[in-house]
Length: 126
Image 1 (tube, rainbow, N blue to C red):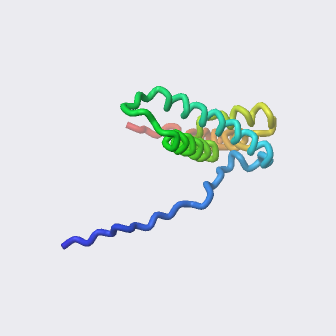
Image 2: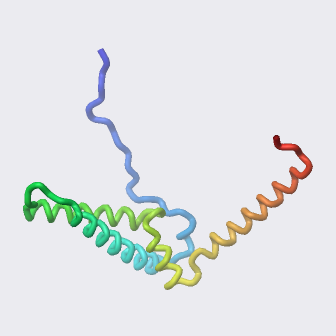
């Protein structure tokens, strides 16, 4: 007989780790950008939810639950590094130093790739 585990342990991180692209951004600027992305995402989810046709009318409790669920989803998306991109756009406008470290790393990566590719000149890759 096969034993199944009906109570699997799920380990979720207490907070999502931030990538290096936000390391040079002061917390107040990051909070403002995340807040704007959260508002936009919450509004987007609410408008998308309005397009769904229901067979039965929703109760007030169900509408409140759905709005709270949309808000939590918006918060998770805004705090992630791969949201809708509103956070990056806002940060580029309000904090001119945003992304300078990433550009330098990109330039260094390009130069490294260029040097690596030049070292293979003359080799036949068929």
